[in-house]
Amino acid sequence: MKKNFSIGGAIVSLLLLSVFSGCQSAEVKETAAPAEPEVARRAPGSLLSLEGVYNVRDLGGYRAADGKTVRWEKILRAGELDKLNPEGVALLEGIGIKTIVDFRDAGEKAAAPDAAIATVQNTIELPIEVSSLMDTRTLARAPLAQNEQILVTGNKFFVTDAQAQYKSFFAAVSDENNLPLMFHCTAGKDRAGFAAAMFLSALGVDRETVIQDYLLSGEYVAVKYAPYIAQIPNLAPIFETRREYIQAAFDTIDNEYGGTEKYLTEKLGVDMAKLKAIYLK
Image (tube, rainbow, N blue to C red):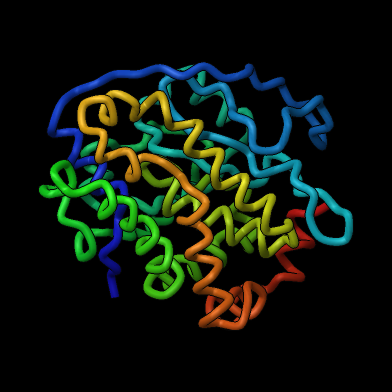
């Protein structure tokens, strides 16, 4: 059954209010060696240099289970990819991105189709929509306190009502034939943010580090959404990442499913040993 929860859908609707532009700088990504990449790396969670797109980062480098580290250039997360310029496309082709997992709904994809990346062989569409929880026509005039609860509710929704999509996500990332893989939504902070939190948790990354990775998205999209917030301050909670948002997901997992490991294995079908063998070194 198609689930109606898409934070990006709200963002797309809000674009109709006004047209803004923004830019964001990031460090230049170093070129990987032809063999197993062992080049100097950014810190875990830092941005790739992709002008015109936001919140694109490699999930490599995090300390995980058994003192091991998440491999670089196996799995990346991102926001919408429609504004990738030729240099950005070349960077992703250099990594060899083979699979795209897209959490956006049909309307979002039609409004901002992904740029073509020659190395991509497979696009997996796992749409999650929010229309049943959020009337985008009223967001701008809703009280701040009401908007502050939308992503609390949303993250609980990801846990309970989007299990089919996230189970399919884990099936995709557990297939080595799909790698390197990039997953994204519109802002790369909510649907993709929950996916990243569950992925890192499955590898044994500690919860506080997972939360800090989630919070980084708010910093990385701040420039993009600052004009909206300046015009309508009550929208700020929609465009931010706050600890209480992802904490709501973890609390739901702990209280209703007996903890992260049980949730991942019993509800999302994750083979944690296999995942660690693929992604940790």
